[in-house]
Image 1 (spheres, rainbow, N blue to C red):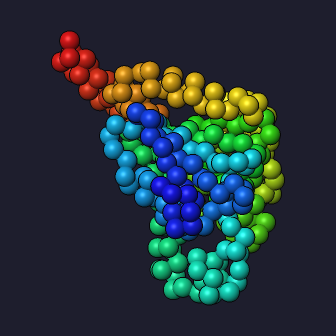
Image 2: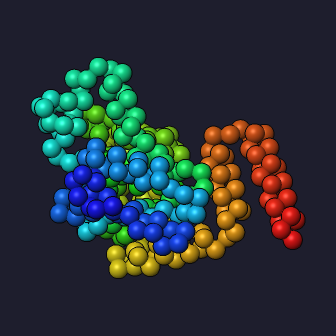
Length: 258
């Protein structure tokens, strides 16, 4: 994709089973607009079965500083702005937000593992985009922040469910209500970051992680990812049954391929 306004400043690059998605608006710290979310959703819709890993990055010194400032305008004439959104009929407002959310939710789609490479700031929509991924590698200077409540809003881009999964109820509540920044060291300690590395090691660390993920046989990798995801919500008996079913499929494939 061409990284311009029409494409939401999103570009993609494919290398075998790995798709890299880059927010490419470094002069604005990769601030997001509805066009960004539409472009991200289109990437998700275009995935084929050969893609195993999606790496999500932000160009420049920050991952994403969140919403483009123009969207905070109360003017209903600002396309995609909060003023316009607030004046729509309730059902239309919620449908519009649902479409925005689809640009985030696909990052945990069956068949792929998503990795966020986070440097600098990941604020608001930027933090929620990083949280939407399965795994996160942060640079030592990275800071995640969810300031929506302090602005009179709520995190509405899938951030609450993913945050609670990662850090638990009480810590997620505190982070969301205070809107404070969470540095890389704390993020690693509480489970938001899988790894923290110096800035000049980010590319190498992500490459090493992706290489390790893709080293496993594709069928086993996808079945295992599906099991771990379902374990978050399943009761033990249901999860045990899911494990039995998945292992039965793996055994059948292994024996069949012997």
